[in-house]
Length: 192
Image 1 (spheres, rainbow, N blue to C red):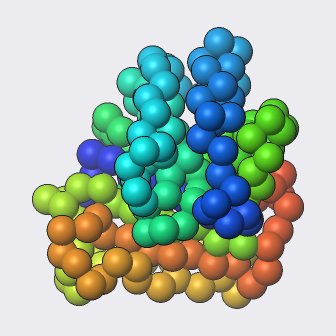
Image 2: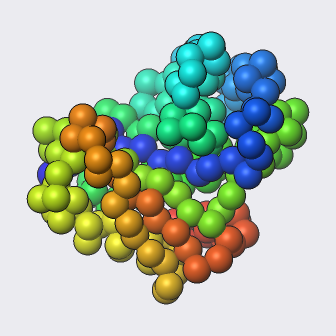
């Protein structure tokens, strides 16, 4: 199984009321101009008016980045898309790595005033045909999620199924480390 899209989200440490969508419009436009994040970047879209929605999205050909308010929790969501070849483990690693690099770029930019927790990441397999949000679907992917947890957070990381209450949502897992770790340490673990 190679899913069509995989998503990773690192949650903001600030409250949702503190997310400045206007600042992210500028940050993401700067990312396009300066190629600050990976991917073929195309445009920036403002959905800040949508309650618990996608916020501001940096749209790319092969990857999208957004400051996202889904589930009522702000975070930086990265969606790897057009996945072909490789293994599920490689695509999971690549999407989480791109998300960490985007978190690093946002925090280095500083103009949004938003910081992110490195204590955990929510990972989604956004392909209901390849990975339905069911007990069987989660059981089929659980080993991949656990291996990712160990690669990113080391021993002591935990994996819990997320969004199990609604079959229409993507298959998801919340991966949590034993403690928050330095961003560069997490990135170094995913370098191939």
